[in-house]
Length: 484
Image: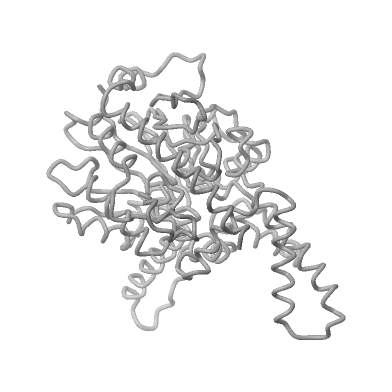
């Protein structure tokens, strides 16, 4: 069998109560009075089963595969630093802390929106290193907002001290290093004629470029070139992304309450009521003539309602399809613009064969698209997600590990999918085109994975049990918020 070279996962959301990668207890009502408590010190059965499955797949290889973490690994929006870090430590212990680690000593990390703060700390650390090399009197360069597609080319190297230290705490894992790429990373092969581009995927949604949109509205004509450069997207929007989606977990009760707010945006009437209450509270505490307050209230409510409704209609919350028409448009624009331009700028050309792997939406996807500027159709894969957002099953949501061999053949392995059926869907391989013959790599994987045997069958059962538990959590969370 061809060696399994890379394993790509995203949206683990370590620390979040709704993540099946985080253990829950139903004995202490610490999650907003729901009767559930996060148990960060106990490894989730789904996490344990997933790593056992990976260990079986790589048994007999001369070298373990390289792990690629494609964002939203720590949930810094909805959990405290120490909680998400403790859950990640449990993962690191199982994956790296023994004589036969599942993964190799270099880990690649592409931050997402929920752990964007780790990108901020990494790039600032690199800038500090840079400052130490500039002689007195020489001009200082500006800090970077993006990395090269190939993170090993960065000088000085950008690493995540946070994740690296959590791994290196484990016995036997002192040599492991987490290298950072943001927001895109490329695996290259065959003389750079084949590439796998990895991105978390949040920039495929317009809400993550809201500051750029506001700039163009407030200062029309100021932008001289098209907004198709990924560095510009990040430079103009990083503070917005970092604040709302990656730092609120550090804000104590405010961060915890954000989870309840998300849970209460299910319908337009819910949004209207929440926005009305928020606006009244803000203006009551404000100053100025009282006769202005109705006008202010109307204006503020309109703006807030528009943005919150936009978030409530995000791709992650659209459960009618694996990718909505709006989501397809956003992904197409990202590939045709920033991704194509970055490939062209750094490699001198767009490779003949490109695969694009992203997460963020929590909805597995395997398709092939013809895209302007790419020599051949692009294979597109979504890694799904490991959280449960609703109180009832949503069949489009599930968790996937994307497997890549030495030739950069890409095969998604769907670990679980939400289902209301009595028998949950088994572990299975996905393919972007059912009419194509399976690749040699896919055929070899299919021969080695028996969904009805260990460790896959127990993993399917564990995922079904934990998703059912999360449905109860979401129902209790919504009830608690509306009760308060």
